[in-house]
Length: 513
Picture 1 (cartoon, helix red, strand yellow):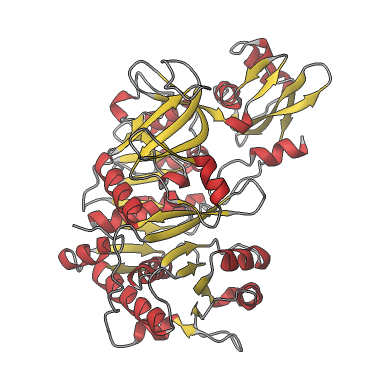
Picture 2 (tube, rainbow, N blue to C red):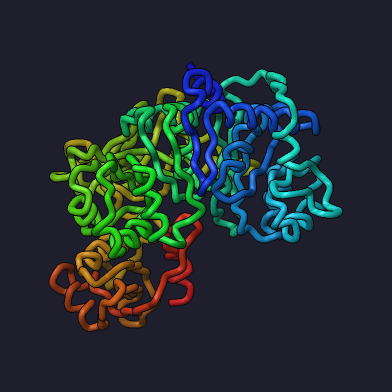
């Protein structure tokens, strides 16, 4: 049984050699081929001086090469550091330096932004370039040459499950990203847990439109490697009709997404005639999906199970999920803790909160991170020692729990504000807005107001072809919300600012409000 992340691949390759592991566009690779090529990458990294515990950054779009580089880094004994390929040179240089990165796997096409950053990384020993050739004057290794060489297994680095497997950079309070440290034990446990409650089988075919630099996207590849199913990689959801066509072509059984993805999918005219009868389940994470969207997805895919999930990078991307059988009675909930994890709510005094009381979500389990890389003070704010000597994660998210133990997301602590002396949770207002059929996307923030202290402002993106007025939005809300929750200001836009993972940048909207 695997206790290291890359052993998922090696064990599956031994029993399902010729089964397709990945599909990317017209290209595909079997588990045996993926295992062999990642061996080659691992050997090349070791030969370049990468050893146990060294950091290897992977800066590629969703592709077979990305996954090969990921597993190659782990097989070499290194710690995987994902970097989005859209990252600018200054931020790239920061990550390479902050993580003391020893090797970088990057596309030759981005040499212009990569080379300057590499020059500022003091511990970097090599770059593995993915492309037709090593860029002129750049130095480093050719990915094509590496995987074309005769097969040689890498040297066993002697890892145990306490060794770090990944450092995932996430937004920091100082404006600089901070690295979340995850061990092999963290990732192996969570991958087992996710594939268990999703009831994944080797016959599954999962479409991944999520970036692999995002933990939610990465988990699709890891569960595929553990169970032995096929993952269909999409570079983005920029061309939704074409992506929908590939869902049909490959007879997908699993579809993970985020709210903006599902909103776009539901708006496609082509969806009405698409044969997705093979679809067994859908999952949502990253941000809560409005109840109205959940109901529409259930109507569109009546034979598919829908999983509402909640997680964060600090907990290896997953904390809880709602069993699809509970959707009818607990639609607004994100469920209960995943297998081998406990999640509960504490009040302002740190005691476990009574049912219905809003407080901070606390997590204990094998999915809790090791801490923030080189950030002891920030680590101390999030990680605390529990009564049994275990490590507890204080998430900073506000939740309530009902008498049956089901969790309900309320808001990020930092998002809650007061209007006329009353607390406002943006999610409560957004849920009401999404009940209006003409709204595709909505985000609510607090804005300074001389009369109310802070006033509710709603940013709205209408559905294609729909017409909306500010008066319609307010009238709709007045019929569903208390007076202090009704938006005082409404701004209708063509689009909202989003992160690379599709989450709406509420902080950006608050700054420009």
